Image 1 (cartoon, rainbow, N blue to C red):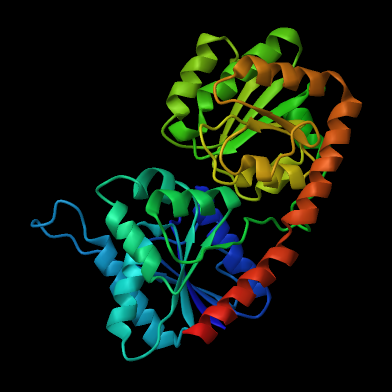
Image 2: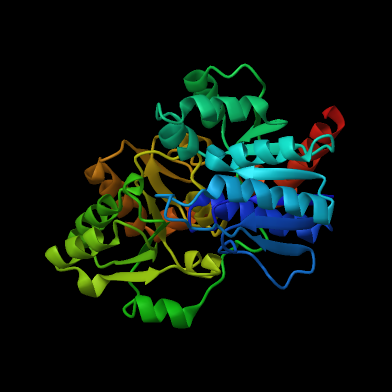
Length: 374
């Protein structure tokens, strides 16, 4: 198939999943055309089955904000016609599904089906805003196919938007061959020269990720035992997190790595992964850590309980309960056997439900069904 994929090319979960999906589809012989304002952060430009088409937005004094939605729709139509696409797959409803809907209308009478994948904040935060709710509902209803990344998000979308159509649940996934535990004694010694346990966090550092809670949890752990905290990513809350680290005099024990490629190599060195988010519709970072045999302490919100099993491969706490999270962290880190046992269970559960070898065929099957129906 020839598939057009549009996503935000940033460090957030929706862009990562869309890019990984394109990579997996290309590995299976499909031609994948990314359509966005910049190359997605994990896109492999050297893959002969992967192409990138840049959306250029003209600026005029008349516009306070460049009309990206319209420029994207035009580029979608252009790529559809020049590359004979079979379908468009847009990730994150706003504004991508609206642009796809416009492109489909402009392509008529030729057939240009599009599928919308809902990722979370496009529904729970942006789409539910009254300024966007009607157009979000309409674009979902008008999509030729709709998927959600978790049972939680599927139910939340139906409830909040009163959606009548079917929404297929196809979960996020991880390449279980790539995301596996790989020891790197040199790098581990650099981060933890005295053999201290390593706690890790990976996100886009937005307020919903509660970065400061990560630091607070670590501070409580560090008060009881030697440890190191490795933070991967970047975003608006980095400055506040750096300030809190200085305030608690933890500079020697906390490493800010910024944005990183090949995160599986870093995740493999963690003894514990922290994800204290206010809300997660799935929790992709937790899944990536679990595939690398890292137990997870996360919040009992959204779709996280579909990924992390409390007391088996990690622990779940309520948002803001840093004391309980620290208690669980100390329990895991104080006993090497406990951490390894939970880590092995994490890997086992990740392989059982979320390997790309199982999830990608579900997308391929859904594409075929949508094409047959349209």
